[in-house]
Amino acid sequence: MTASTHRSDAPAHRELARGELTRGTFDLLVIGGGILGTSVAWTATQAGLRVAMVDAGDFAGATSSASSKLVHGGLRYLQTGNVRLVAENHKERRSLASDVAPHLVNHRPFLVPIYSGGPHGAAKMGAGVFLYSALSAFGDGMGRLLSPLQAKRLAPGLRTEGLKSVAAYSDHQMNDSRMAVMTVRAAADAGAVVLNHAEVLGLRTTRGRVTGADLRDRVDGGEFGIDARLVLNATGPWVDHLRRMENPEAAPSVRLSKGAHLVLRTPDPWRAALTIPVDKYRVSFAIPWEGHLLLGTTDEAYEGDPADVGVVPADVDQILGEAALGIDAPYLDRDRMTYSFAGLRVLPGGPGDTSSAKRETVVSQGRGGMLSVAGGKWTTYRHIGRAVLEELRKVSAVPLAEDMADPLRTVPLPGLASPDAVAQRLIIDREPGARLDPLIARHLASHYGSLAMDIASLVRAEPGLGERIHPDGPDIWAQVVFARDREWAVTVDDALRRRTTVTVRGLDTAEVRERTRSLLEG
Image 1 (tube, rainbow, N blue to C red):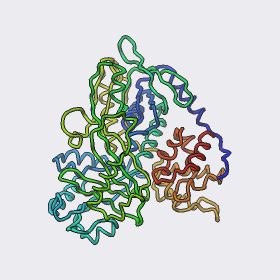
Image 2 (image 1 turned 120 degrees about the vertical axis):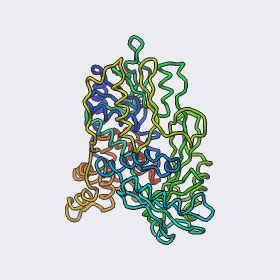
Image 3 (image 1 turned 60 degrees about the vertical axis):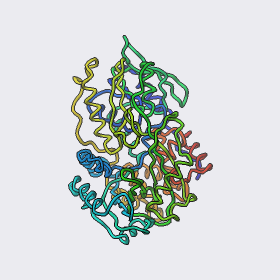
Image 4 (image 1 turned 45 degrees about the vertical axis):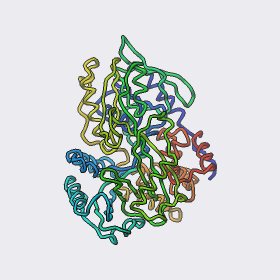
């Protein structure tokens, strides 16, 4: 790749954002740019509030980009009889897939293999997937039983030894990093002022109430302050750390559970995912994702520093061992691993093991008036934003309700378009003889929607940006420039792991990282 002549606008963007953050008093300061903070910032801005959102690292840089990449109703919740939750999840899943982000959320068949001596019988699972489909009003077809041969065509690595039957149902998946970045963009488009890599040094108080924060820009070291009528702590695994800034005596409010995942190359394309029963309550997933196979997850208590969470050899052994219950050994060769990652679920405090803890959102208010919110899941992230907005209306000490309008129920994420139509446009819009590779076109369309046309414009202006970042992947250098100028990417990992798919494919070589660093510095 030739050196880019495309100059960076990123420093100016950060300077403008910092200037805006220090201007006047915001209605709401959201600390934490994961799915919770971003959803609240997006929703509150739609309601007419002046909103600021900051994150000490990158947007979705921790747990929110370390999920199982699912937008799902939660088949396992039927085990606990929580039919209402499954129905609510289905409703939100279908809204995301049809109205909010059809360019980012993709339909995926799922298979549950039923083995001799396994924890579930065919009749029970058949009834379960039928009920699961019924709760989504059969919007994705009817759950049913397949023969082992039918299932093997959809999931080539399926272990058939002792396989009696296979239950099939439908769910959706997404690239969580791209969903997060698009939601940040939606919040910014609606009027929120956002800044990543901005660390909170301390909270500002006025007559005992928390009224803002002092921060340091981790990019240039500059310090600045933000004033706000109300501060929301949405820092995920760090939620109690910030609560102790408000009140050093604050008791722990949450506990953490680590979920690890592995990404493996697969010799054959899979058209369906596997939900592999491990015991009566736990399952292991094997999900086709970004041309690879995503395996996981674990669920164990974590008490260390959230910044240090990572995949350890025991996690790899557990994930591969559980996957082997439903997948042939050649597909689980450790040499096929391209990437691994771990995130932390934030669960309500209390007794019992983490796998049985409720996946619910916890909202609390500290003695200085700061609201703290933790927990939740990707599928219902918009619902959580609306629920927290209702909590903001109730804060009597800060009468925000009188300044708030009712936000629209459904607002699409930026780039809303048919990925097929966008891919077709990308291919035919080029000059004859310079057509875009269909694989690259499809990749851009399914990760950016109509915004892929902006990336194509960068390539038209500078053809060298149309080259692949690595010959074995579909990402191109124009995506790095776009990430830098339009998506707040500052570090190499911001660009390669969370704005593109280079890292998860195991393609972020030393040379790729150096070229990326050069582009980011402009």
